Image 1 (cartoon, rainbow, N blue to C red):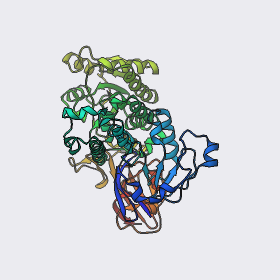
Image 2: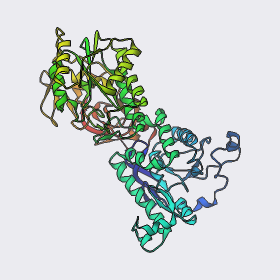
Image 3: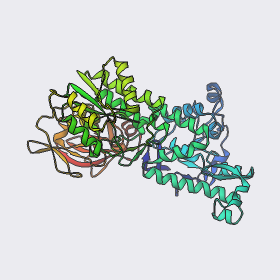
Image 4: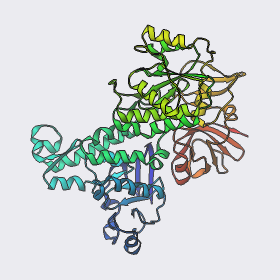
Length: 543
């Protein structure tokens, strides 16, 4: 019997233990296939090219007997939770990015998410990070052994001639003894150990962006994967408590960025202000803790809705500045935005301004941010009032902003209303609600009742049972007729809002009970998995 115990997820990548009978291997890692499955060598007609036609596959191909299951993008193999799936010939499409992504999407779309994935003869120290990012868990030494036979020296940075070993770039036991084959195997194993650590820290994307630079095919695969929203988005956490490193052009297409822009455009409630002021971002997060934004807020004095223009997120309403990733990202500052940045950022701004009709829109910006605002305003047919005569923080510019808002009505920023809309897609009447306490012990109260606590790590709201009464519709998880003694496992889930993502706050509903907690996996994965924690329970009550 096979079992895949997933301990940590980072999008499609998983860290855990795959076991079969008495044998086990940590993922991501190297599997000894002959030891785990000695009968696999006797299987026939399973090694069919990935590019084979549907007719050929259905007529001739077999998927093997039991686990592991050899799968094909055009096959209909009976795969069950816990199985090891083998994607034969995956190494043949590493240089064909469109096929890599299309085949991966076809396979991931129909195979249970709690299966382990093995890519035979594919892993090198320089590409295994991308393979893990694509959802492969187990590998072998065949690819590095082949490079050894070719006289190659393998590093995470690429594959080099064997004579590089004499330069001292590596001092592993293989290099010390002059055994290139031993070095190549160790290099792969070291890289897999590093990948496992990055998965645990939810930072694998940062490693992939660094590793893929030496191979155009890998860069193309990563960019094409980012366009497969249906493949990646359900497995991408709604929030993380770690820095978001937006250091490459690919960061503009990350799921976290596109999800942010979509929610800001589509979920933001009607603003309570009639005037909007567009402001530049700051290096310090949240923005309101920076010196520049202290100056901006003193000039605005609640007379306009403050909207921060930034790359890569596009637009951050003031009430969302503490929400992931707005309070967590870091970018290289050059003072220049290229055309792709301008196009993507202006599209978020125009989408927001086109939906929310302000009586006036002020732009207290300069440089690329002002250029993006002008493009967005032109697209919406909105006149833009530019108030930054020089640099936005110069006294003359701040005085111009103050003067432009003369006579406008003051209204406070409603953080709770904005975060609830972004987080749950609902507009809640927040009159009478107050925020009490200090981080990390902040809470939202009304009439002496605690409705929400604020997660200081992510800026999201954690509803109490009284708070959930204000949130209609989604983010519910139905469970079978049992009383949870702790966390809720996937087999106990009977219904789920498929919009739930890992990290979302959820309300669990069962027979005569309800519970609050945080999703440990996405809604679709809860229904398709037969193993693993679905919800980390915080509190249970009997109805």
